[in-house]
Length: 157
Ligand SMILES: [Zn+2]
Image (cartoon, rainbow, N blue to C red; front, side):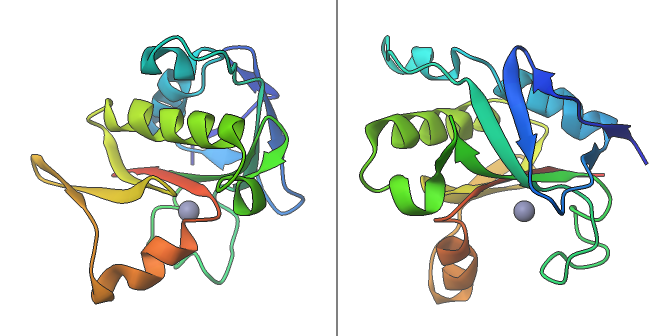
């Protein structure tokens, strides 16, 4: 399919859930290499928080919530559930470090035109042709609420 994620990207430690198979496509790895950086947050005005680790909860392993034919199964998506060993689910709302780092990762992902889905607590952004749309409304309520707990980045195959 592609490649196995290693133990770090740009010096940022990668940790994996017990279910993750660590497999991603070369294209996804290339996008991740542009996002996962110690100083990802520094563009947001000299912020002191450095990204030291990310916990990858899911890659391409078979998982019921990740449909066959969807980007995860082909290695074109990655889910991140913790930054600097802090869980996004419980800490994004009230931990400045988690919020700043998560938001910075989503901003960095939005700056790479190859990013297709860029979902997380900051918002769920999806690229349609030349346009990047912020998902909203009843139709997207499930996707939006599901991504309060983790970051999801994908690329088109
Ligand atoms: Zn995902």
